[in-house]
Amino acid sequence: MTYTIAQVRAKSAAKLSGLLSADKAAAEALIDFAYACGVPIVITQGLRTIAEQDGLYAQGRTKPGQIVTNARGGYSYHNFSVAIDFALLLPNGGVSWDTKRDGDGDGIADWDEVVAQAKRIGWDWGGDWRTFTDLPHFEMTFGLSTADYRAGKRPTQAQLDAVIARVKGLYEEADEMTATEKAEFKALQETVAKQAETIATLEGKTKMTAIPSWATQACVNAKAAGFIDTTADGSYDFYRMITLLDRAGLFVKKGGAI
Ligand SMILES: [Zn+2]
Image 1 (cartoon, rainbow, N blue to C red):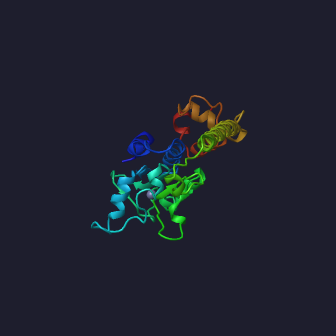
Image 2: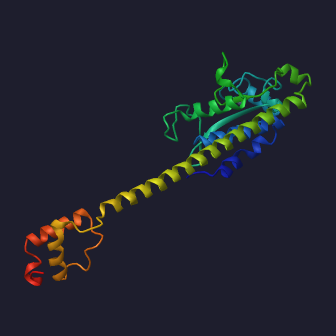
Image 3: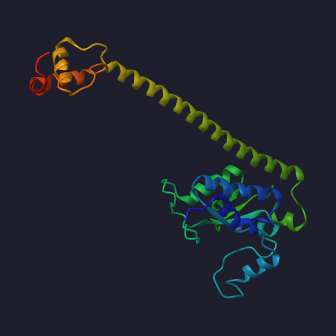
């Protein structure tokens, strides 16, 4: 199925609710801008509590399973509402982490399109980390380390507002592009209308104002034969055809001479 943007947003709403205001706005923008690129995504993780993080850290260590994180509780930006993980949303409702998938068939991997949009919005990407790259992960940390966050430091309201303003600006930019597209479409419509006029004029020019002398007799014969009602407004091709038919003797039999 093809998703509406409302359906796509709805799938991530719960995961976004625990994020800091600025990160939430930036995550919503990522969903919207990726969708605009033809890539529906779902946010699979936003805030992860410290207890949840400890549980995840235990996986592959003191609990069965594969190691999925190097961060114990309090050492992941997810614990402080400034990180998100995403997955590609498949048409069948499933999700995919296939970084080569090209669902919209534009020749660019969907994953790369999402990463490009995220960076434009201001997210740092886990794929850029030197060790333990985390391809589905984005974070917007405001220059604070997890140690800072553990110590209780938080971004200032001004920092949060700046991100929200920037995100708003990106939406406005996108709207302006739509306005440009509208203007281009209007110009295109005008061109088409002008061309239609030109075509009508050209068609008019093919109509001859007077019967050419070489076709006069043929027209008389055709009219007399009841083959045509009027000889006015004929095109060159019309007179030519009448003349050919006349020469073929089609009108003489019935109508006779003048
Ligand atoms: Zn993550």
